[in-house]
Length: 459
Ligand SMILES: *Cc1c(COP(=O)(O)O)cnc(C)c1O
Image 1 (cartoon, rainbow, N blue to C red):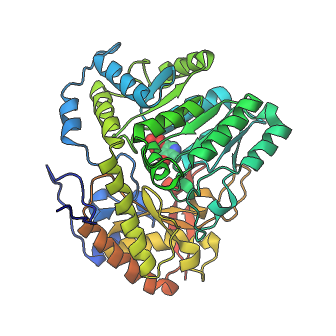
Image 2: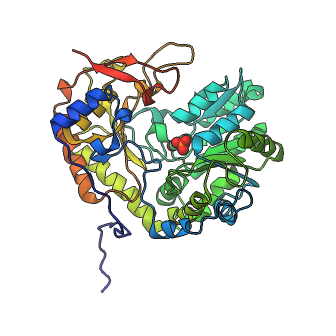
Image 3: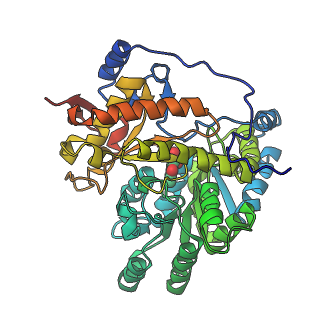
C-alpha cells in the first residue's frame, strides 16, 4: 500500500545540541534598555529564539564537521581550496572564482573596480551592504523591482523579478554610466521573493544587447531554484543543480555570501568570466582579504563550504526548508498578522506599516515591533524599513518603501515547536499592536546606521 502522507518532516535528526537560556520579562526589559533599544546590541545569551538573520547561523551537518578535519591550512595552493573551487564551479562554472571572508568583501572589491562617481548600478532590490558598497564608491544604487514587489499584499509567484522595461529604458538613455547590472536571488530586502528563470533570461538578453556585464547577488540561489522548480511552467522535472547552472549561464559573474544557502558560518566569493576584471579584483583581494587561494578564509572553512554546497541543492532539504518558512507565515496570516505574501524562502516579513498604522514611518514602526517581540517572548528579529534605508547619502531622511520586520529562519536550527512558540508570541503582540510606542534615534553612525544606532521610546 502506497500511502500519501502530507507531513513534511525535517530531513535530519539532531546530532548535538546547544542549550537555550530562558529569561524573565524584567531581565529582557533591562537588557533592551541597556542595548539602546537596538536588537543588534543585545547579548545573544539574552535571546531565546534568534531570528535576527539566517546569515552564518545555520547548523552544519555531520559531513561538514567531518570535512573540517580535512582542512589544509597551507598558505598557497591548499587542497581545500581546490575542493572549494571545484564545488563552486560545479554549480557556477565561471572562469574565475575569488574567495572572500563574506559577501560584502566581494561587493567591496567588485564596486571598487566597477563603481565610481556618476555611475548607476541597477538591481531588483539592493541588499543593505550592496547598496552601501555601491554608494561608498560614489555610484547610485537604483532598485528596479517590478511594481508587485513594492506591495506586501499582492500575490505574484516571482515578486523579485526585475522590471524589464525600466531596465531597458535605463540602458537606452544611460548605457555609458551603467558598469554592471545586478540581480539579487532571492530578493532579500524585498521579502525573500524569488526571481523567475524567464525574468533572468530577459535581463540577460537586455544586458547582452547593450553589452553590459550581468552579475548575480546569489546568496539564496538554491532557494530561488527551488521556487523556479515549484512555480515556473516547464521546470518541475528538472534537477536543482541543472536549474542553478542555467541561471549561472545567463550571467557574467556573481557576488556571494556563503553564510546563506551554502551552510557556512563564514565565507563568500566573487566570480566572473572576464580576465581583466578578475585580475583587478585579485589585486584588491591580496590587499585586503588574502592570497587568491584562501581569500579571508581558513582551509577548514573552504572544506565546510564545499560540502555545504552539495547539501544546499538537495530536493528533500529544499522542500523542507521552503515549507517550514511557509508554515510560520501561513500561521501568522491565519492569526490576522499582515505579512508579505507569498511567503519568501528564508524569512517571514511582517508588514509593520499595516500592523502599526498609528505610528509615523519616521518613528520607526518596524523597530517598535522588533522591541515588542523581544520584550514579550525573547525573540530577536530585524527591522527592514526606515531605520535601515531611511537615511540617504545626501544627508536627508525619508521613509523607506516598506516598513518590514523580518523573522529570518536559520537553516536546520529550530524545530517546529520553536516555531509554534514564535507564532504564539507574534500573535499575542499583534493583538496589542495599537499600544506600541514610536521611537526616536539618540545616536546614529555615518553609514549602515541600523547596526549601531541607539533609540529611545516616545511618549
Ligand atoms: C547577506 C547578504 C549580502 C552580504 O553578505 P555578508 O556575508 O553578510 O557580508 C549581500 N547580499 C544579500 C542579498 C545578502 O543576503
